[in-house]
Each structure stands twice: as C-alpha cells, then as structure tokens.
Amino acid sequence: MQKKKNLIFVSLDTVRADVAYSGKFEAIERLRNAGVTFLNTISSSPLTPVSHSTVFTGLQPFNHGVRHLFKEQINKDVPVLAEILKSEGYKTGAIVSCPGMNRWYGFSRGFDHYDDEIPLLDDGSDPLQTVDVKKRGTALKRAEVVIDRAIQWISKNKNEHPFFAFLHFFDAHWPYEAPKKFAGDNVYEEEVAYSAHHFGLFMKRMEEMNLLLNTTVVCFSDHGEDLDGMYPNDKGGEKLGHPEELGHGCLLYDQTQKVVLIIKDSSLKEGINIEEQVRLVDIMPTTLELLDIQKSDFSFDGVSILPVIDGEKLNLPAYSETFYPEEQTAATGGKFSETRNKKSIRIKNSEKIITHLSSDYIEVYDLKQDPNEIKNIF
Image 1 (cartoon, one colour):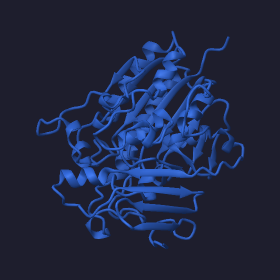
Image 2 (cartoon, rainbow, N blue to C red):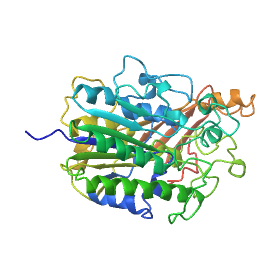
Image 3 (tube, helix red, strand yellow):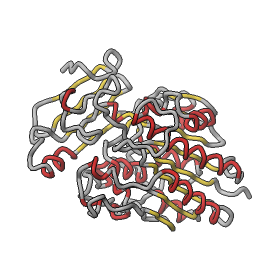
Image 4 (spheres, rainbow, N blue to C red):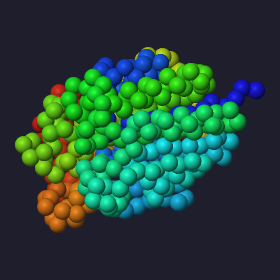
C-alpha cells in the first residue's frame, strides 16, 4: 500500500505576485517549472493573521472570525487544516516567523510542533501588542533559521508518518534590510531574493532526502506590498495620496491583493500557468482533494481549483476586506480618521468594485483597460 502523500506549505509573507513571477528568483522559477502557477490569485485580506486564517480554514474572514490585526482568534468550532491532517495520521510541524502567526490566534491547533518564537522589539515590548505593521515587522525569525529548524523537524519525522510541514518566511516585510543580497533590484526585492534563496536551499535538501516525489508543495503569499512608487500601480505614501497605507493594510488594490500561488504535485501537469482568477480561500479544499481526503465532511467558502487546470471555467468572484483602518485610526489618536474600512469584489480579472464602509464612496475599475486601477469609472 502506497504511503500517503506528505504536504509542505510555504508562505512567502508580503510578496507581491508581479515580483514573485518576474523571473528574477531562481528557486521560485524552479518550483514554477515543476508545478502549476496561478497567475491571478486573490487574497481575502491585506493582513497576515486574517489572510492565513482563510488559507488554513477555507473560509472567508466573516466565517472564520479573524478580521483585525489583533482582536480575534479563529472560531473554536472551525476545523483548521492541521487538525484535519492530524486526524488522518499526519505528523504536523510549523516554523513561523512573525507576531501575526502567533499561536494566540489559533494557528497552532492540530500541530504537534509549533515554533512561533520571535524576539521582542528593540524597546523590549511584545510585538504582538502593537497594531503598527511596520513596528511589528522588525520582530522576525530570519529565513535561514526557518529552514534549519524545518529541516531538523522533517528529518526527525519523515519516516514514521506522512508529514505536514508549514514554513513561513517573513523577510519581505518592512524594514527591507536583507542581511545578504541575492540579486534583488531594489531593497524590497533584495528581501524577496533573500527568502527565495533560502527556500531554494530547503527544497534542495528535500530533494536530497528523496522526499519531493511523494510530497505536495503549496507555495503562496498572504498579501503583497505597496511600495510608495517603486512600481507603477503603487498608491501608498504621502506623495501618492494615501499616507495611511504603510506597505499594506488599508487599501484593497491588486498590489496587495494579488498574491502568489504555486502548487506542485505528482498528479499535476508541470510548468503551466493558469490565467483564470482563483482565491486563497480555495487552497484548503484543493489541498484536501490532492491528498485524497474526503471534503464533503467539511464546509468551505472556497472550492477545489483543480478543474481549472484542465480548462474548466469556474468564474470565481474574489472577496477581500480590511478593517485595519479603524485599528490604525485608534492607535494613532485619530490621525487617519478619514480612512474607511473597505470591502471589494474582483470579477473575472476584468472588474473590481471597492466599497468604503460607513461612506457613500465606491470605486469601480475596468481591469482590462486599467490594470493599475488608476481611473475610478463609477
């Protein structure tokens, strides 16, 4: 009887899809050549804990319960992926690297080993207690530590059970100070290159241990980054008219909402690109289908996107939300009080509608004619 497939999840936190797919990063290109790249994947939120909760539950924020940076935990009655896999006999381990993945949120449920150790901030305070996304970003576990600990855990657990390993890389988050440079074109891409380099070393080690053939690999990012004019679609910062957008959190444009999704599995075609729009909320049901785990026992907002690979049109509308503006306004004593919470719907890679809550302001963009979302046609 064939052993159940192993599963590796890799989160490239804060990595824009256009940057990841630029061809500049060898490890990402190698994975793309071996798997399926979903070019238009939409995140449910530009915040790490909200977006990852969606990935690990297959539910939108209004159903899994995490909607702010630090107010809620995953609903106790919602099963998470690690719990499901543990019930199927998997050994489960995670190495995460930022405050937004702390076990407080409920991410550790179902994991035999959950390493969420990170340093205190420079002033000695707990990074989990601040809603300043830039300040939180200075407390992280670097990529080389993530892969070293992940390799140790996998080496110890690879033989007795199928395993589920989750690796979370936080290097691409502000402050963009990569310890070493690996061919990035700017300070942000240097950080992406840094984490991609170490991800490549990890994958090489998995290959040396003969683990990749019977392992499903799912690589994604939770949200992107608005970089104050480094890229043509940026809108954040004083000079671009959105001083409230400090990288990510307040806006729902594609620079933060279009994210990475690459899936490698022995049953899938290699080296293909999928144009059709999919969502991070679809990862959970898709993964369970790849692992041949009965999905009918669970309720998801997402669907399996495997039919898309064979050319089927699913026409999945992509929902996103952010309630970070209210947190930021409170934390800054009302500095950005004119900024509103937002919800958006993105339709068929062709149209996006953004509503500003508690306001009559609505944005509508024709993504075919205006991919950078410059002209509000409403």
